[in-house]
Length: 53
Length: 193
Image (cartoon, rainbow over all chains, first blue to last red; front, side, top):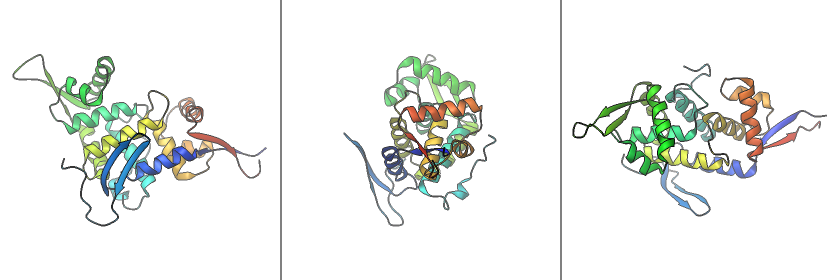
């Protein structure tokens, strides 16, 4: 019998990856839609912040 | 300081985004008295208080849409652990203002480094993280296991335990079992199985 292992589900992995987009500060906007998360990002340096806190 | 080595912000640049999420959780654990069993919701309450210095319990309740008894319990915990200060209002002694303080404020500052100091983005991150789970009170420990699993791909329980927070073996086993029950982790067998 092989060694039992665990693996993240595909759906959870996708959602974790989406959350990763929030990390690091290149977020332009965030929207919370009916079917999850919408995050617009910009892949350039000196991207603007989401808010001015 | 927890036995789990806290990564400093210096590691931020060299870590992948998923690994950075693990570091964020580490800082939140430190902000919450080095207790990985804290619910993610408690972290969110602390973040909200930090974002709104001198806020009141009613304001937090309104912003986070929490019921009074839940919030009372969490605020008491945060106060008892020295995460927040409570000060009576000078205008109305019945009103209590709250402030994050000490080690909590310091570690929240490190957490916010990952969000360009935006409390709003950190709040949103925690909200979406909480919504990933189907159980009612996911903890920082649960989140750390999930993030570790995302980073590692296929892993044995022991490997995940090593990436998670220290604690009683039964606590860690229960946490992983719960993630399996929620369908977030899937049991597999390696190629020899």
